[in-house]
View (cartoon, rainbow, N blue to C red):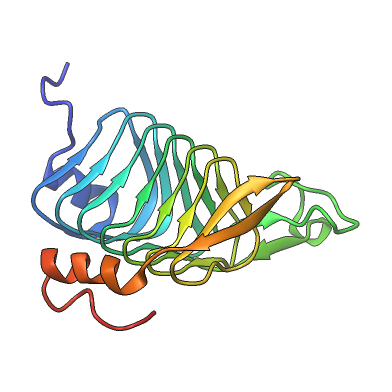
Length: 195
């Protein structure tokens, strides 16, 4: 049994990451499949996360336990200082539940209707526990998605969403300039400009 609870840089590169920052704390209890992408510095991925496909993670990123990051149908990007609460799922591909078709990856492709699109979490953005981000969604810089939201449309920079009545409701705004200023202070040259 390996005594170190975290994957080594060499192991992470072997999974398919083309770049791995330092330091990183990636739990050995997490799983990686068909990886293409990068890991920044000061990245923490907790136990029982599943990461697959084209996934690029910036610096100072925390991904809490039981998250699923699926970059199989498009690029999935988590910018610097973004974070995910427990059991968050990010999808770049999903069955279309409105379509008159079958569903699932075991069904022939001509019988399935799939939604596809890259997902991006901006700098300083956070997504709360048990939330789902659907294909093609961008969560803007410094935006906050509360727990148990299903996000089907892009979220403006600084917006705050909470769940309610089976949809996400905007309830306020965060100070984008202040949050990006903190990113800039932590990572000079990377916190400026709007996404």
